[in-house]
Length: 220
Length: 220
DNA sequence: CGACAGAATGAATAATCATTCATTCTGGGT
DNA sequence: ACCCAGAATGAATGATTATTCATTCTGTCG
Image: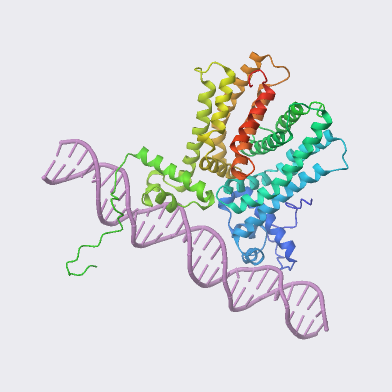
């Protein structure tokens, strides 16, 4: 889970020593994806250009097409990266057998979902920029829903375990999981669009409240 | 241009019965906003062009600039229209003094939020297309948050009334209102991006569940 | 009926952008 | 020291697009 984006590695002001460097394909691809994320966050998906992305990456215009064939493909791969980073992180926590207490695992999940890594404006912007286009672009729907389904199943399983352990009555794991996922998505939206009215702290409190009402024995 | 052979003068590409009509400014503006909504839903915000919008409206290319000055402004006004339609509808229901039973009013609100009018894919697509750009465009943030704040206050007031009436303990109107709003937003997202896994029926059930757990005396 | 205000048109313009590819350069291999 | 596969560059190209505005047309009013 290396969050290497935003790290130095780059001298925006091209100091006199601007020497051409040859790097392996995978590294250049990641460098371009990171630059794309920053550009989308700063300018919006509809305003992103290849010139913008490549210059943000400190490279020449032609390089994006060299490594990604087309702009469409670069954007697609950027979405895939963000989706996998987010859902992969969640799944890792939910499977986390090194954290046997289910209540603690819930807490860790919430921390991840509303903590530093994910709710950086950059990542959220990208996330919702693609959601906005998903209605018109089946490719995006497919990428997101593929990875989403797995996370949803894991969450449902975790909730089912908790329900069993806590002997909770009148709750259904599937329905709760859908609700919790939607709640988290909605809170991300709020953090992005109305940051003045919804702080990260309050978003956590609201999510925690949801869990407490569902699993009172597990969440203090 | 034309020879002297006496042939009928060439008819411009006038489709049968397509005569130029003069209509008041307000009507043309709405016609263009409606066309913009359809175009965003079908092609995505980043692919919308003026040609596309004006031709969808059945008008000439120049007319959008005539009535909206610029593309940016047309998009801004379209967002304003959708935002006001959605939030206005909610507020009307929440204020609805013709519906004295608070439980019924909650039901009506839920019906509106997840019912036909709002969750048409068209409207949802537009909604989230703008959310995606909001991170980069303060104008959009302002439009949405202005209208959003009012709806949030009304919802909080309604919840407060319900809490008082039902003598519910250990719940806070403000926190619940934030959670409920986020939940609805998240469900809209799910309906848009993963329609296969989340049906409208199930979305309603999930939202209802949230309300039932919070206000058991008011929601059956 | 005739004239006119201004609504509507769409060809032309100028700007922007994705993509190509001939050329330059790098670093590892011999 | 030399070579060269292929990584990187960026000027050139062609396609797309927002915006303008001279012209055409419509409905109304005197």
